[in-house]
Image 1 (cartoon, rainbow, N blue to C red):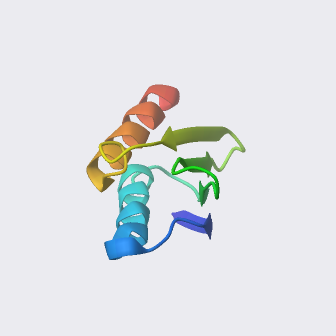
Image 2: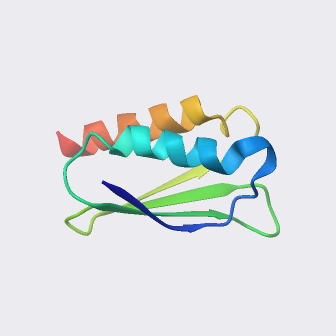
Image 3: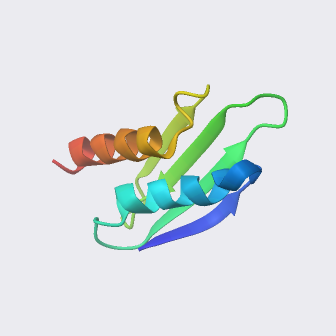
Length: 87
């Protein structure tokens, strides 16, 4: 289960929903409750995604630029990193 605690990314053209869907797709297959904070700095276009696992481990991802801010890129990056950390 994924719980979104904070999301400051503007909802331009459904960006916010796409971002949440991508994170849920990447994390949803893992067991336990994961908490997520998503922030966009007011002085940059960098998106920071912080995931806290059920055991308290924290994973931080930064996405910047149009290529990195696509749902597919975000989903794949997070899923790949979490798969590596789980093995």
